[in-house]
Length: 370
Image (tube, rainbow, N blue to C red; front, side, top):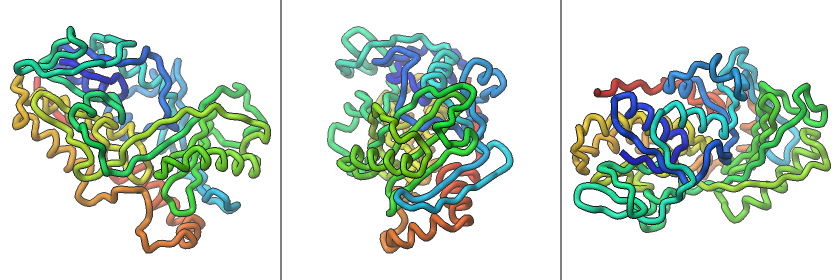
């Protein structure tokens, strides 16, 4: 079994397959630990799906309980603070989180090796002319080479461009930053077609912005920093070295997710939640579903035997009923969107509970075959 991509989706799939006794090789062009463009928080459903021991995880790694959010609109002075009184998410650093999951998977690893060639030979795959596998899993993000092989034509689904920076701050609190550790700040564009964040997690600060208009992302990121500086959230003289990323929002038929002997997971499959852009939970859940499908196939990896994976993805992520972008209906003007973001009920129950936390959706649990 070859998994291309050692992020949360690939490592989760490998973890479950290894637990069932399958020989798994994870291949990634990066060396781990490695950074990943992401605000970096996980919901309780992710903790449950991964069977994650928070006490153990937090001993040597960043783990910031989130008990509230501050939300507003970029360019406007009014914002709404929502307090939950208990952790509703946990801030993590992707360099630590991804490395932990990959090591926990106990899969064999081939790191620092990009995929150059993929070809089908008989009933199996050959990668880079020497790695052979009966089953190939693509979990390498939006630009995953397995996804490109399976989807050679450009997609028409919405693509989000994101820029982010994460850097250390003083452990005893840095007075230059007005961000509360347990209260990440979210600031939306006027049309709700993107948002910026400012998130302090223990000894690190993460600032970023995601936008549907890729051409405007760099300009919008600079404007967002100026906005935060003008409001006194970050120092006026702060400068940032942005890192960029892009990913598909989940939509019907955005990408083919399977063929004979191949499955795509997470961002490689285009599964990011459209309202928030979150990719960690869809990656992990698709990794669990993929592992279950592979085990049920019992070594027969034809398209028909793998078809339940596609069916379960559609059922789990609701492609038929979900919008394909994070915007409000077209009839909703920017002025009305700004007005709604001033209403505490809307911010808490729609923006936070429904769009970001997805608190009404239970954790995915699967009984895997052995």
